[in-house]
Image (cartoon, rainbow, N blue to C red; front, side):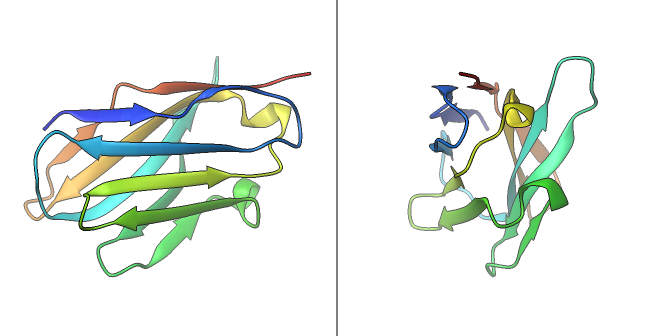
Length: 114
């Protein structure tokens, strides 16, 4: 499974971006999520969503980011509002299938700077 992530870019503090990630084939994923890795830091969970719609967020993004998924399109989205410089990182999507296999996208750069 290849994952295509898009939507990253350069934005000013307080701005918004929407990331999307879609696999190259139709599959049932029990979990879809977004992680990020800033320079010199470990990769961390940003948010994930189950097939049933249950969500989990990192404390640092609660109230600012919203994860959603379109099961018909097999696509996961991350709406990022009120962006801060500390949100700067490479964002990766990850999906998990019924067999608990994990697949990672190639990453998309998000830079928050004035």
